[in-house]
Length: 427
Image 1 (tube, rainbow, N blue to C red):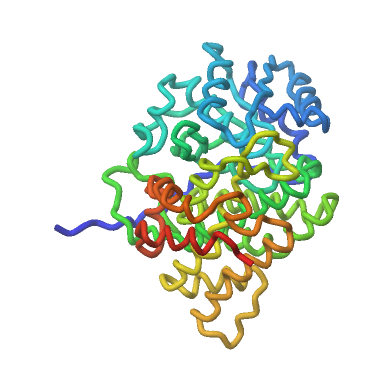
Image 2 (spheres, one colour):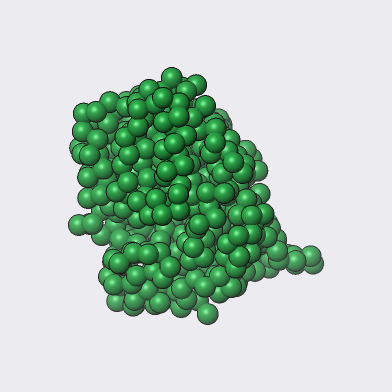
C-alpha cells in the first residue's frame, strides 16, 4: 500500500505587534476585539517592576472590567494549572491577557482552554500520557505580552506543564490554543535577571535549531484530514526563514543581553528572536533536545537554579533543553550535514573550506562555548544527576513520541541513553 506524503505547509501564527512601547496599544487592541470583561494572568513578581500596574491602567482606561490572577507558578505543574483553572470557575471572560514569561502564557492558554471547554486535565494532554483529544473549536481571544526573551510561547500552539506524580513534563498541543495576538515590547524584558536571560535565550536557540533540523514535512504521512494534521508538521522552507534569523540573533546578541541587561539593542533582537523562533518551531516542531528536556525537568531532586528567585527544585525550560543539545545535534548531524553546518555558521563559525560534515560537527562545541560564556550548568551532573538516573531519564524521554517523531534520524532508547551519558559533563 502506497503511503501518501504531506504536501501542504499551513502557516498559522498570531497577529503581531513588535517594538519599544507597543504595550501602550493593548487597550486599543482589546477595544477592537469588543472586550468588556478581561482576565489578566500574570506573575506576582512583576508587581515589583510596575508592569502589572501599567497594564492594569491601560486596560481600565478603556472602561474594561478587569480581574487579575497573579498566582502563576514558574514552570507550571498539573497542580498549579488546576488551581488556575479552578480560580476562574464559571466566570465568563471576553478575552484573556497574559503578562509574563512562558510559564504565564502557558498557564493563560490552559485557563482559556478549560474555561471555554471544561474537561478533565488529561483529556487534552498529548498522547500517550493523556488522551490527546482535539480542542473542539476556537477559544476566547488571548493577547500575550512576553516579559522574557526566550520561550516564544506568545506565538506557539502548545502549553507545557509538569506532571508531578509521573515526574515528567508534557503538553497540550492544538492550533486553537495559540494566542490571537502577541504584543512584544522589548522594554518589558529589561527587568529580566541575567540568569533568566541566559536560560530563556538558550531556549530560543534550541527552538530554532531543532525546528531548522527537524524531519522535513514532505517525508511524513499526509494527515487523513486537515483537522488531524499535527501542530508540528516538520521542517519546511517557510519555518526555516524564521528559524535562521532567530539563530543568527542568538549568536550576535545573547551574550550582550546577559552581560548588560540595559543593552536595549540586544534585548530588542533577543525578544524578536524569541518570537521568530516561536513562529518557526510552532509550525515545524522540535525534536530530541526538547523531548529529553522534559524528564530532566520532571525528575529533578534538589537543584535550585541561581538567579530565578525560587525556593523549590526546578529546571528552567531553556536549561533543560540545552543540556543535551550538543550530543543530540552530534547524533542528528549525519541526517542533513548542510543544515547542521548552517546552524553553526549562523552562530558565528567560519565554515570556509570545510566539508558539510566537518562544518556540522563544529556545532556541538559552538553550543558548549556559548553555554560556558553565559554561565549555564556544566551538564546533567551539575544538576545532581548520575549515571544511575539514565534509565529513568530515557523512559521519560521515550514518552515524548510527539516530539521524537520529529528527529531527522531514527532514534532508539539506546541512542537516548548514549545522548544522556554524553551530556553528563560537557567541558
